[in-house]
Structures are given as C-alpha cells and as structure tokens.
Image (cartoon, rainbow, N blue to C red; front, side, top):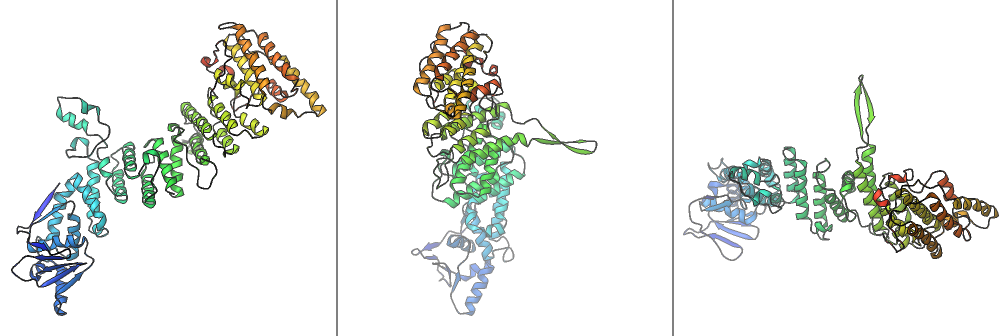
Length: 620
C-alpha cells in the first residue's frame, strides 16, 4: 500500500476522555474548535497560517469575544479535522488510501490551498493521489470504496472520476504489462501447473484476461456500475469477459444466488444490484450463459424488480433457451396463485426463442430499391430439438401439480408442436403424468391432451407401456398397437400392411350404431380402456412377437389377421369406438403435429424389437 508522511515534529496530540483533544505544550490553548461533541483545545497561530476558513471563524469569534468556534459539517468529521490540525502544527501525519480522501475533502472545506501558503495540504494530497494512489491498482479500489462516505464533495473535487478512470485504464491494459498484485481465486490456468524456460512468456500467459474481475466485486453497486460502464466504453474486453465480471459480482453480492435464492433482508439493496447487472449486460447473445440469465430472472422476480427488467431478461433468455435445463426454468408462481409454477413466463421464453426464426429478415439493394428478403430460419435443428426436449421435460414436471390447468399444459405443448423430433417419449411421459395426477378430467380433455402426441413416434418401450396404460383412451391404445405392428413389419423387411379389414368392419358397424342412437361414437372412442381390453390387446401383440421370434419374417396377412382378432374381440362391447380413427387412417392422417411424417423416418434402432416383451415396461 502506498503512503505519504507529512511533517517532522513529534505528535503531541493527546486525549482526555472521549470528547477532549488537546496539544501538549507549554503554551496554553487560546481557541476551542468544536466538531460535533468533540472539543479540540488548540492555538490560533498555527491554524491561521494554513486555513482560510479557520481565519474567518477565528476572526468572527474575536469580534464576539468568544474563545470557541463551531464546525458541524466538515467532511470526514473529527478524524479528518485532526489530520488537518496536525498538518498545521507541522506534526507527522501519515496518509494512505484509507484516509486520504477524507483528508482531501476536509482540507478543501478548511481552505488549505496555495493562496494561503505554498505547499499547503491540498497541493501535497493532490500530488500523492496522482503519483501514488492512482498508480496503484488496489489502492485505487480502496480509495473509491472510502469515497462513498465523502459524496458528493469527492465528486465535486473530481477525485472519484479520476479514480474511476484510473481503475478502468488498468483493467484494460495489455496483460503483458500487468506487473501488480491482484486477487484471482477461480480456476487456475493450465500453465500454472507446468514449467517453461521462458519466464517472460510464462508471465504473459499466466495473467488471464479477466484478472481484474474479483477485486472490483468489493465496490458498492453504484461505483461498480460507473467502473464497468467506463471499461465497456473503451471496447477493449470482449463481451464474454464483461459477462464474467457481472457474473462474479452477482455471486458475491446476492446471498444464495448460486441456489437461485435471495435472502429476504435488504430487499431494496438487492433489487438495485439485480437491475444494475441487467442494465450492464452486453446486448450480444452468449455474453453470459442462459443458466445465469435464468438465475438472474428468478432473483429479479423475488426482489420485485421493475417489469422492464424482467422483460429484458426474458428476451435474452429466449435467445439462448437451448442452454437451459428443466430445473432452470421451474419458476415459482406469483403469490396468491394456486398453481406451483409460473408457466406464462416459460411460454414467453419459448415464443422469444421461436421468434428468432420469424424475425430473421435482411435487406438487399437491387436497382436502387430496397427489398426485404426472408432468410431461412436462423435456428439450427439441434437447437430446436433441445428446446422441444426441454419443454417435454418441463411439462412432465409441472404435470405433477394438481392445480395445473389443462389449458396451460396444452398451450405450452402446442408452442413446440412445430418442432420435429424423432421420438415423442418425453411428451408421452408428460401426458401420462398429467392423466395420473388428474384422474377426474373429462373424456374430451383426455382426447385433447392425447392429440398432442404422435403414436408413430413412440419407442418400443413407450409403446409397450402405452398398451398397458389404463389411463389412455381406447383409440390411443389401438393406435399404438397398430403402429407397433407396422414398425415390426418394417424392421423385418416386409411392406407396410394395409388397414386391417376388422377395422373397416368396425367402421361400418359404427354407422349402424350411430343411426340407432344407442351410443355416442365419440364417447366410445375416447373411453378409457378397461383392464380386460388392455389384456386382449397385450395378448395379441405378445403372441405376434413370440410366434415369429427374433429375426423372423413377418407377413402382412399375419399382422392384419392379428389386428382383426383384436378388433373383432372388442366389437362386442364397443361397436363404434374406431369410427373416426379408421376414417382418419383411411385419409392418411395421424394424431399429433408430426403425423405427416412417414414412419420410416423413425430411428431404426428404436424400431428393433426383442422376443417375449410381455413383461411390464415403464417410461414414466
């Protein structure tokens, strides 16, 4: 730490209790200077030589025949005044980064400038600041911290602005020129564990680009904002380094931030920190991770930040939503709501993510005219698939909430329905969880939620689970059975079978039932499968697999015959439950948003089946 000693005489200031200061001298004091509750018993002559303000006060006291002067608003209080008084007596005074700003402000207040005497206290302190403090990295930070209690006087004297500029300049210096100490407790560089004969090269490589980040975390938020803003204007550091600085500051200043929690105390202080970090975030995507942005959003919601702060975070999160995990996007619902999670925020994130494709527009100049040209989507297939899987996992998690409205589930699922994924197992798991936790939903609601899923895109294990699932409508169970048989035929090299004759017969039978008015076809089709019906479907599927064995060839007539048996067995109790289903198959339609894709697009590995799959499988 830099320091400067002023004066040569011994320090003869002494105390008498907590409120009395005096100079041990043969001469009796002739003036009392009161600073608040503390009284300084001093001599007029030394003070008059150095301080213009004390000259004025002593002159007024003489006119009033008083031996005491009152000073109530001197910056730095009694300690700063004592430094100035000792300087007037020529006593030894030591200045350092901790007390120099208070002494400078007090000297300014007392008028200890060059007009009164050459080489006065203000001049000496300014020399010390420029030649010592501002040249030292850590002293500059200490000085800036201590200036907090000296505002706004320190700002008026330009000390704060000079200090900020000094810190910013050092933070932006080339790493090869960094030869001072700094705090760096994060992951060590690989070079630190090795050796190199070229010591200069080692020194250059050992100084990371973000060497300055941790020391700045000591600053209060308003001063930190000023320093980072100054660093950003110099455009030396990349957005990633600036992002790393903001991340370190958040973890240092926001208690329990790493656990996506904030302590309840100091709400306004924490709100200011969150809003400042968001304000300082670089505009470019990838400056900070998506997971950090989500933690920042949770903190912003907890401390009740302004709406624009939350909107800005949600917009940034939407730009890199593929980086998030399910845990990251589990945002607690607002107070007073019955549901557990705030699903509307997640919907907005997904919309922001998808809007990156919709808003990908460029302009080109042709013939002097500006034409808008639509780009091909800027989102990669991998990013889309990651987001689709993320939402599938999120739906499976929030489906456990007994108070979750079906509309929330469906609206969010439909947002990513346009994203093609090779398997719908995650979506099936979410649907099954919702049906399990909400057993009382109507047939129509079961139909709506199951329409989100494409039965063609269920894996073998998911199909086996679905065939045994008593929570699914019968139409879905039979669809799964049929497409599993189709997949089995495809994997064995035979052609895809036609729609079984029994299903066509069932469609004809349903017409008669409809005319008689005895049953409602929609009710039959959407009814939940009974245990007996599921056993019949499972038995037919298992017998078909066992009869052919591993590597055996399947014939179209085998599959159609098996399906015919199943359907004919169900005709006795539900004549018309497949009317609409068969009609849709006849037109080449399937449930789910991806139904237009052929089954051949599924992963071949998923299509392989093994013998004897009559045990119970679970994907939930």
